Structure formats: C-alpha cells, structure tokens
Image (cartoon, each protein chain N blue to C red):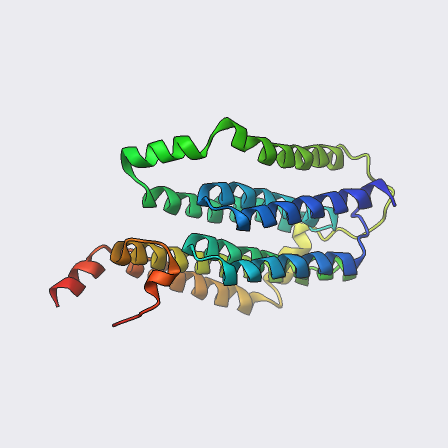
Length: 172
Length: 104
C-alpha cells in the first residue's frame, strides 16, 4: 500500500472516529468541535481523490459557515452569567486534548500533501475551471433551483426567527 | 499534484458508514441540536459518495452535485435552527420529546 493511499485511510479513520464521538457527546459544544474535525477530515479526503474545489468549499461553507451557525445557536440558548459559567466548565483544557490530536493528524497530512512529495500516483484532478464551465453550462438550471432554494431558506429563517410569533399566539 | 487513486468501493463504504452513523444519531438522540448535526453528517456522507464517484470517472459532475448538496444543507440548517429557536421559546427546552404533542 502506497503512502498516499495510507493518507486516505488515515483521514477516513479520523473522520469515522470524530463523527462517532460527535454524535455520542452529551454536550452540544463538544459535539460541535468533533463535527468540525470530521468535516475537515472529509475535506482532506476530497483533496486526495482529486476534487480540490470541493475540499475548499467543504472547509469554507461547511466547517466555516454552517458550523458557525450552530455555534451561534448554542450560544444564544445559554446567555448570561450562567452561560459563561457553563462554558467555562465545558471547555476545560483537558477536553481539547483528543480533538487537538485529531486536528494534528489532519494538519500533518495536509502539510505532507501540499509539500508536493506525492506525485507518483496518476489520478485525474478535476480543476475548478472544469467545474465552473460545467456548472454554468449544462447545469445552469440547477444553479437557478439552488438560488430559489436559498431564497426560500432565507424567508423561512426570517419568518421563524421573529419574536412576535409567540406574542401573537398568546393574544389569540 | 496528481490525485490518489482510491478504490471507489472503499470511498463509497466510508460514505455508507458515515450515513449510517448519522441515521442512528437522528433516531437515537433527543436533543434537537444533535439531531440537526446528525442530518448534517448524513448530507455530508451523500456529498462524499458523489465526490468519490465523480473522481472515479474524472468528471466534474460529482463536485457540482456536492455543491447542490451544500446549498441544500445550508437552507435546511437555517430553517432547522429557526424552528429550534421557536421550540426553545415556546417549550423552554430543546428536548424533542417535549414537542410530541403538536397542537395548533
């Protein structure tokens, strides 16, 4: 088994372990940390199989935007001094050890892959250019549908996030 | 850099296992945040399957499908978290069993 293939299995193991840990935590904050590591491992896998654009999107949108949304909501749900105490209690230094270890594995993998020493296995890399040409060529209808979906999500979030939904219900 | 030739079966098996973990999470967990995270895991596993299958044929279609899944995940999580906040305001808890009686 070549070194590059070993990298894939290592990233797959990190992904599985962190996903299982994420969904078995009692604490939502801990689960979020492990879920972010799982998504980063997926990004490494995407890069390894020759999809660099998808890997970047995974980090920027999934681990960046969507997980930050989760963090916001977790923080909204426990505001105030009680929340601060809870957070202090949840994010103890010892808690970071295992997530840090998993992140370190992924980081070393990324350094190794980006250092360019892995060039002996010839698979095809699908570049962002090819993706863009196809996305705005044959798949342009899908882009329109996705934009409508995102608009619907925006309106839905605006409607559901209103505070006076509760008040109007109490009055009636 | 050239891509690594990963056996497609192994990539798909990884996606299947991740999807199963997410599905079990949805069924077992009672915390709404954790349920939404399980759904995210399932969507991510679908994206992984698309990427691996697209890489097998060297086609861009897999990545395009992944981007569509990404937008679906974004819309889903926004609506889901909005619902979560409403449930938290009305019921005062994020335990999904508390909302088992949906009365108008």
